Length: 225
Image (tube, rainbow, N blue to C red):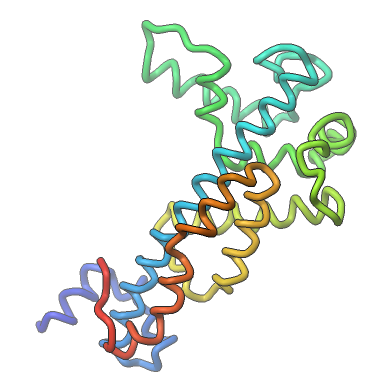
């Protein structure tokens, strides 16, 4: 068994198949694509991380201001639907398991809630009418620069949630339109934190990694692991 065989065995033939298919059966080129895919996923983690954190903090502050308490989810008219309640319960359970003898507060719950929870607040609510509960009453004011309505905004955040989850679960991303993904991430980040968006546009590594793809696959530039 040669080195390429051992690498593919470590990756698993099933996981490696999409890369091999994209490269027309050229295993050397497919291994380079695998390495580049990991590199671009790492680069994308940075804007996605800051998008998640910035969104979480902006929505939380907006809802605290609207309902007058840090645990806004306990205000009857602001309670999320059953899926949101399940996510809150899970966040509390995790905190209780991690710190059984230490109290925790709303700020700890906020930090524990997933990106999916915060994105869901921009959605329709599954029969609970989040448009009235959250969007019209409060959250639309966070996105004053957005044109196109709640549904279009929610759809863009869902795209970013899908990308974030693919990266978090170590799934490949090379098939996606990554230039468009970066543009969407920065557009959304600009809504919730213009300063953070400026920072990523100035210092972000994603454009450089995207530009390297052809040279990495051809072997002209080295892989970065």
